[in-house]
Image 1 (cartoon, helix red, strand yellow):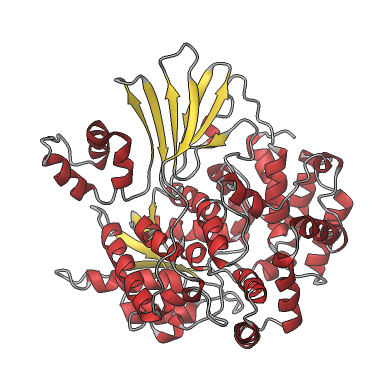
Image 2 (cartoon, rainbow, N blue to C red; image 1 turned 60 degrees about the horizontal axis):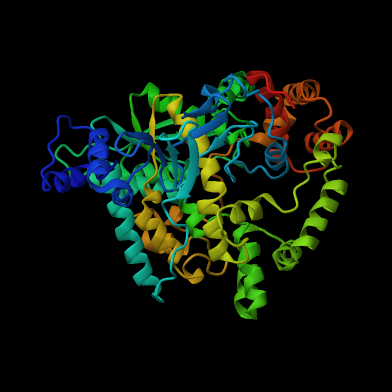
Length: 558
């Protein structure tokens, strides 16, 4: 609870007295004094359960954006809560079986944590911003769920670019202040991208004003493969912010060696070898003695930072007849990102189509271009009626994404963000690191989601308000960079080169351990297309491999 000092002072003013300096005691006292209204005062990341003896109930709460986990299972014996899925496995009446619809979503689209279900049948999660109440006054306890943090945000009044940037910068600056509160060494992940670089430079400015001018400890992953190496940008940030930098070079030999351990900590299969890079960064942070790491998660979702956002923005420009803006966007994307105009035009059409036609075309594409690799007897019974992203939106009462605003709401509250936070939390905690995410201060998120689309995508620019806000704070080459990598790894050269035998072996393991789940002929054809160079290597390749690793680790049955 980052604002624990302010809450303590407020509670002491009401006559409360404290025996410790911990934020846990403040949380208990806050609930005793304010009840559930205490939640609105909390700034932080949390998942907790309180026993309310006065009202004979158990209260389980998860933070606004799902930074910290809270799972539960209901069996004939009762209701069990846990912070990890593996703690619930093996309970009487809870067999370790796949939840096939959610496994299908993961394999097909790479999305998980987009509903309250997990990939384990019978194991659910209290979703971000939800509160679970168990009535203990009845013979058989009953669990009810309700949302304590609303997902709707009122649109802000029209702001100029400079006004929006100034307010965004002030909110982010205040958030970094709060996230630096710690009694242990604090550092930051540094990818060289816009988000993590912004945090490092803001942190440096604050620490350099302290006595002794302590340096920011930054940890970065780099590669010899220039296509994914961000070291030139990292070097500029390190020089500009005068950080004490640690740079690691993750090795391809360790990807499959570490895969089983990473899967064990993640509890569920994960989306790409990028998680291996993230895992390696946290391992280095632990080695150098940093206990708290600030990271840039959350900016892309609230500010339309993913290039797929261009598809929704372009479709909205078509609907509203803003042809000049559409032309500018397409031309700048071609110039800056190398995206051909015909490819952009195809992507523009999809958000404009009726849902039924979109679904039909997706299935057709999977049958032809993807060789029908998921067209199996098992999965035919679990074909979704809508995309995982649309399902995510509907599951919390949002409309399926149509433009930047609705896309940002869905990504922030219902899909991508929860998945990325899941991976980061498990990777960091596996190394006893507390990963903090300043972009997810709720006041900043609410401001960002309320902003008009013109502050997010302008021409070929993404996250425009952040770029403008960081003028004079970031090195210009980093502030103006328009490529996007994140914690990327050289998957293409690794998987087509030294790891090819292990990829093929992992694919066969998935077939053996889940017979009939995948269409074996189609999957082999898809994998062969990627490994031979006929098709670009993408994240499906890792998902196919990781499926069998997950099944083996947890003894999951279909």
